[in-house]
Amino acid sequence: MVLDVLLDTLLDALKMAPILYLAYLLMEVLEHHAGEKMNQAIAKVGKAGPLLGAALGVVPQCGFSGAIAGFYAGGVATLGTLIAVFMSTSDEMLPLMISEGAQAGVLFKLLLAKFAAGLVFGYLVDFVFHGHTEMHIEEICEQDHCDCESHNVWASAGIHCLKVMGVILIVTFLLNLAFELGGADFFSRLLPDVPVLSELIAALIGLVPSCSASVLLTELYLNDVIHAGALIAGLSANAGVGLVVLFRQHRHMFGNFKITGLLYVCSVVAGVLLGLMF
Image (cartoon, rainbow, N blue to C red):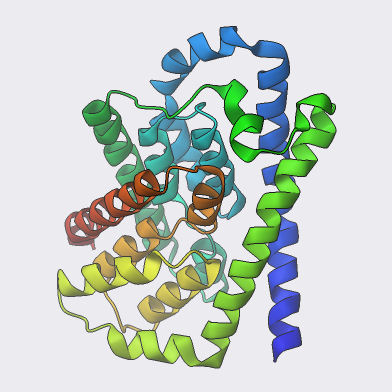
């Protein structure tokens, strides 16, 4: 069992590694060659961030949420863009539903609901926090204490990627093992199909930083254990490895917990409201 979980964890990591590496490579190029020009452009790019983030997040891939967390930690993405990607990210929901023969209309409505949630709450967060970013891009190496400024951009991106992937591997392995040892059965018993209450609990499950949570929530929905609102709440809160990368890269722990709480509240509200579409 342990070997199977380890193999699944390694395969999941290999799938997201190229996206994370490319994200850090872009950050390094910006840091070494764009400098202040990029810092000045952040505010302009940030205005379209939630729209682009919500659209990219719909693609069923854990890596985007991790990449955007790195961008936020580096000051390239706004808080609203981070929330937009986290909420719209679908992880394993889409391929799982297709494999289970879900109706195309249901899939379209779910993806549209996730996109709308990311878009609306992303712009709302940026409006409230005035497109807040944490730091300038030249602080990437500074915050990671890796002394990688002396390396070329390819090596520097590799250093950042390997550090984050190490954390992701450990956390994902432990979570996958917990699910394999009966965590899924526990969560299915924990989730009553009661409006609002089910959204509150599903969003808590969604905060578990693993693609396994999205698989669990989708399976519960397909087996009529939870309704669509709870599924939307849980999937909106489930940012895959995004929260792991955020806590690893963004060293302001209190701020990270506030972002997690904000994601949770937005996801519950989105689940309650958008669940009315189904």
